[in-house]
Image 1 (spheres, each protein chain N blue to C red):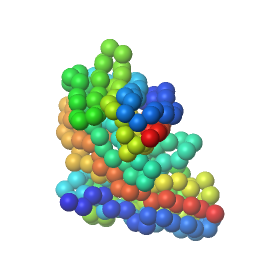
Image 2: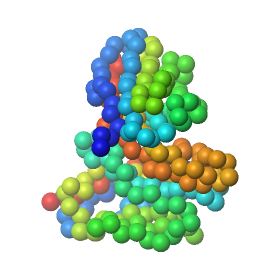
Image 3: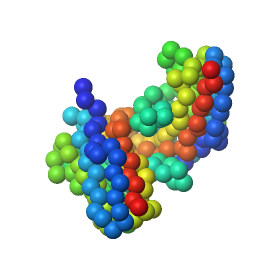
Image 4: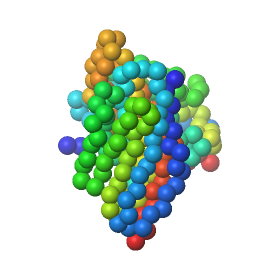
Length: 120
Length: 117
């Protein structure tokens, strides 16, 4: 069974500080996808990134970066020079893909989320 | 392009009443998902469809819940009769899907906040 753990329930940082949100996952599949979503106070879920299990290259998008390490089953998310607009709940999610089956499971298993508060 | 559309955005109803939540997925997306979000249980997948066919409804909490997708552009989630413990935010999401060993990201609607009194 797949599982996602976000051990940090809440984090508070002062604006312009860097912050890393941790995500640890469990899966028996060799092919899987990891995702991060942002849920701002307005409530919608915003897709941030998708990464497959065969691509361990780190990704950077503006102030956001992701560190994927299969050896530790982690997919951590760092925000550099945080801003008040980054305040939100961030979810890490996992989906297992079954090669050769014609379709993946397509079920997203979400972590409990980390609430990030950026203080001006 | 329009994203996933959900209606209503807020619903307040009394216990025992029937509730119908609606979703219009992104055009061209073959997969549609219904999730429920509560403080206690987080985000849970209820059911998902592929090409209008229900694939996995193992997350549907009980027989009071039912979901349909009569065509590629519309889905409903119905609760009958509703109970206070059904109070939650219900999200609809859609995805292109993918293929063998490949999964696309899901795009979520704004959610419906359901309160059952």
